[in-house]
Amino acid sequence: MTGYDAIVIGAGHNGLTAAVLLAKAGLRTVCLDPKLYAGGMASTVELFDGYQFEIAGSVQFPTSQVVVDELGLDTLPTIDLDVMSVAVRGVGDDPLVQYSDPVKLFTHLNEVHGADAVNGMAGLMAWSQGPTRALGRFEAGTPPKSIDEMYACATNEFERAAIDDMLFGSVTDVLDRYLPDREKHGALRGSMTVLAVNTLYRARPPPAARPRSPSASAFPRATRCR
Image (cartoon, rainbow, N blue to C red; front, side):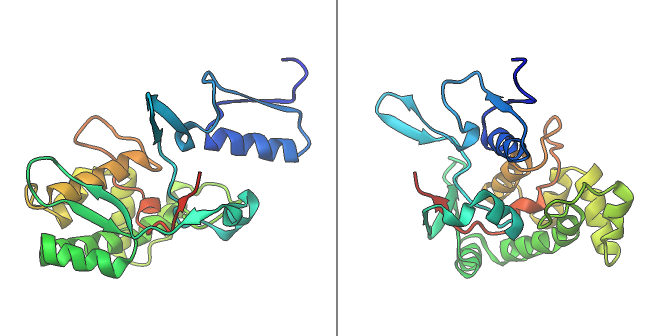
């Protein structure tokens, strides 16, 4: 392994991206992974004989156009989906159907889950605005902000409090604020909690998972073809 300038551990989508950028910069680069396939969470594998599963990574969340251009994401074949996902609890209550079209989504929320669910989701989307700017959600090629710089992104006390929630709070606290009915809004709360754990932040011991990353507060545009 002495013939390389850079060794990237992990051939998932992030590792592969890092390896490509290092190679483009002129470094002799090797990318290593213990698995027999590349792609990580963006892979399609046969977990059971005859059944191929897409592990994750199929949805393109909106991101910086610079990132889209650099990775060639706009050149990939895509399928526009009417429904992104369906969240169920398995206890007989109504599922959460996550439509790609925000109008359809909020119509579903109102008709099936009630006006309080619509108000709660609107509150969550408003809550995410400050953290979105603090994290540099749509920035590219810029260093991470310091905590002071994150707070400086707030335009009012509400946004400052939301950034404080993002940095030091619990997703449970935020959900209790906007979707307090744990039974009626169980599927919706569960979906938001999964997003909190599965995006930029990892969970602390339950129930104190970090608040949902603002990267998941935007509507995905498509699923990649394979």
